[in-house]
Image 1 (spheres, rainbow over the protein chains, first blue to last red):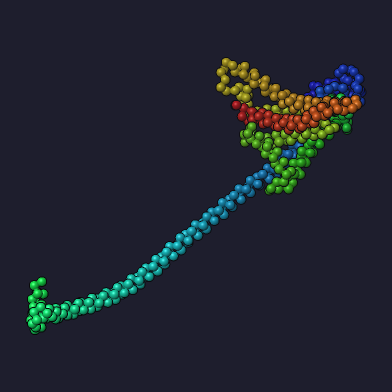
Image 2 (image 1 turned 30 degrees about the horizontal axis):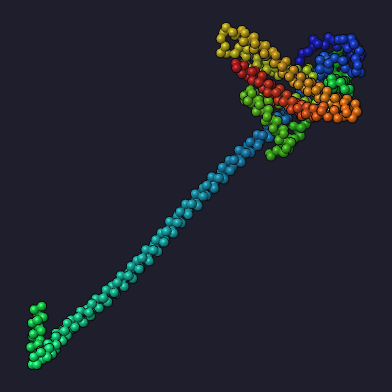
Length: 197
Length: 249
């Protein structure tokens, strides 16, 4: 950094003298030149030198140590987060697979269960059907027997109706005419009437 | 220390060193430069020593300042600008810590001297010019000829561009220097009112409450300015470096 032109006033041999180099007025303080300090060019060389030294070292330190270090920390963290994300992703897909497998098994078990149920139901139904048909056939046989008996009874009853009619006829004729008729005649008469009807 | 608000900027020799006719003495300014560098470097070094995956509070501060400048540079000058990251980070930390250190009573404010801020500004502009010519050769001069400008007014626009380019180191350094200087003078003046008024007796003590409140408020403001000026310095550095990287607007 080149600031040499402003150092003409430093050329005086005794710089410690308390005399302002520009105004020639004596200073009030023991130190400094009485100029407004930031514009006092006699201090520039020292400030520039020490700024160069301190800032230069600081820059080197930052460049060599601090920036790689903090950069490394941040990079590490980014990598770590990324790898953790990947791990989480992997675990999640594993969990998804497990869920899918579980659901498939569940579906299989369900279908198997319904198959078993169906089979049990079918078996029970078939058994019930057999039993029912047997009972039905039993009932039909019983019914047929009963009907047979009814027709027998009916026939017998109808046969007895003729006898009753003959008896009645004999009785009625006796009552009305006072004469007796043979059962044979009565029977013939009854048959004739029955046949007329 | 006198009541004189200017005396705080006085440079006093601690270890006189003279080489030829030049005075390279180790002064109070030099001492605070060393302190600034030691504080900034030491803080960043010690807080990151653990390299914690999960940062503690102090490590967070270091990381935040790192990322703050990294984002600023990336936005201002693109990813290519990241090669200047150590420079911008160093400048920011140096200016910030120097400004904040100056806030401690009886401490010297390194950045309240124009020569220091001017040297830092010249470092930035020098980097821009050297890198600009190294990277683009003569094409770096396109910086002064914005395209899309009618040929007739190119000389005028270029002249304005050149002037604005030349005024950059001045505005960059004067902004920081003047802010620090003015802030510290104002602070000292108001604080001086407190002592000189309370020396006048009971009424003076009552009357000194106002400048005391003012001093407190100004202290807060000055802390803000300390940070803000370091920020502005870093932002403008990023913008100027962008010109070196992409001169063709």
